[in-house]
Image 1 (cartoon, helix red, strand yellow):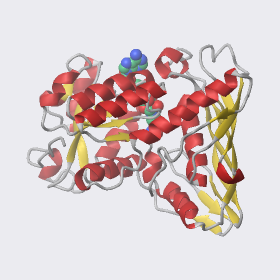
Image 2 (cartoon, rainbow, N blue to C red):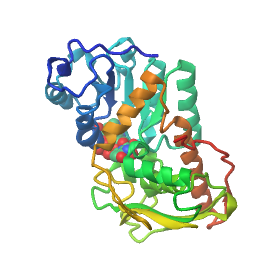
Image 3 (cartoon, rainbow, N blue to C red):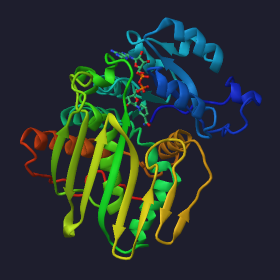
Length: 363
Ligand code: NAD
C-alpha cells in the first residue's frame, strides 16, 4: 500500500480546514485540470475528511501557478505529462485520480499503478474492454487499489434505491426506464465529439449512467441487449453517436429501456415493481437529486457527491471498507457498451450478455 501522508506541513494542519482527519488523510494528485477537476473534485477535496489535494499533473504550465497558489501546493508535487512517472518517489501522493479524456484513462491509470499509487479512474473507465482489463491487471500486479469515478454509489438517493432493491421495499422490480442525456451545443471540435479521444459519443459519456441505473434498480446484470441509434444533427455529430436507445432483458423476465443522448435533455430513472414504484428525477446529475416513491417523497440533506465518493475510496484503502465502484464495475459497463454498439451495427439485433455477477455492488 502507498504511504499515508502525515498532517504536518499540510495547510489544514494549521487549522485552515478543520474537517480533515489529521492522522489519516491520504494525498490525492489530480491528473488533468479541466472542468471536472476544477469545479467539482478540487473543491470537494477541501471538504473530504480522509483525503486531501496534495498534487497536480497538468500539460498547461499556466495552471501550475494558479493551482499552487489557490491550494497551497508544494512545487515538488506539481507534475506534467512527461515527468509524471517520477511521482513514484513522492511519498505525499497516495492516490492518483485520472480526469483526462477517455482515451487517455488507460495509459495514465496503468502508469499510476506502476508508480505504486492507488488509482481512481474517471468514467467511462476506458474506451474498450481490453483497456479495462489492462488497467485491472496493472493494479493487481502493483497491489494498489482501483476505483472508478462512479460518484453515485456514495450518493444517498442512489444508495436508498439500492436499499429498496436489497430489502424488496416495493417488491420485485419488473421494469426500469432510465434516461441520461443533455443537449450539446458547444464547440463541435471538443474531445467528447471526437471518437479518437472519447471512444464514442452519448453512450460513452452519459449512457454509462443509464446502464448503471438499470442495474442498481434491478439488482441484476442484463442478459441481453438490443439497441438503436438516431441522428437529427449529423452536421454537428460527425464522428460520434448522438442518441441511442436500448432494451435490456434480465433474469426472471425483468426488462429495461434506456435512452442516452447528446441532443436531448433528460435525466431520470423510474422502476415499476410488484408492490409499488420508485423514481429519481434527476437521477445522475451532481446537483441535487430528487426522489419520489409510491409511498411518498424521499429526502436527504445535500452534500458534495465527490466528497462522499473520495472519502469512501480513502476508507476503502485505510480500513479495507467496501470499494463501492471497483474496476470490475467499470469493465462490466464497457462490456455492455460494446454490446450496444454491436447491436446498433447489426440493425438492432439482440446481443446476448454473459456477465454473471461481474461488478455488482455489494451494498
Ligand atoms: P475537460 O475537457 O473539461 O478537461 C479535460 C482535461 O484534459 C483538460 O485539462 C485538458 O487540458 C486535458 N487534456 C489532456 N490532453 C488532452 C487532449 N488531447 N484533448 C483534450 N483535453 C486534453 O473534461 P472534463 O469534463 O473535466 O472530463 C474529464 C474526464 O472526467 C472525462 O473522462 C469525463 O467523462 C469525466 N467526468 C466525469 C464526471 C462525473 O460526474 N463522474 C463529470 C465530468 C467529467
